[in-house]
Amino acid sequence: MSGDAAGDGERVRLDKWLWAARFFKTRSLATEAVDGGKVDVNGARAKPAKLVGPGDEVRVRVGPQLFVVRVTDTAERRGSASVARELYEETAESQAERARTAEQRRLGGGFEVDQGAPSKKDRRDLRKLRGR
Image 1 (spheres, rainbow, N blue to C red):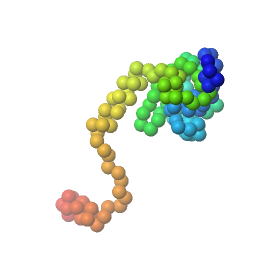
Image 2 (tube, rainbow, N blue to C red):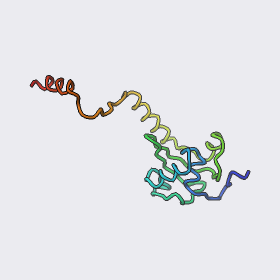
Image 3 (tube, rainbow, N blue to C red):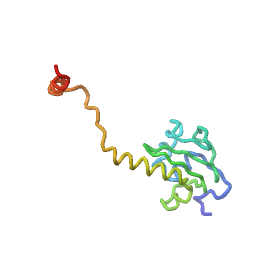
Image 4 (cartoon, helix red, strand yellow):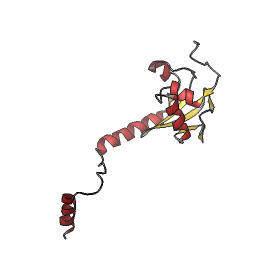
């Protein structure tokens, strides 16, 4: 393998692997996600320095999406997106679940953003609606 890939059987830090696999833009964001409990390795909460290697199952929550992937290769450095995609294999269940939640979000429409306290007009409308 070239100098950027660690190769089969070698293990790398979880935060480095998440960054190299392009789940996060920076290593510090990957570290924050791991510290925040958004990443599990083999079903257990992990620390950023946890070593991962081929065969490990990693669950990564990025925003509203949950990725369940199996590590197929390791890398110390970040490469192109096509190289990063070869570092893991997403499970079929994970792909189906992400597609289902994306469809639900699409059909659910936008949700209302809290605008703070109601205005005078909003209060009048509420009173009229309540019959007062």
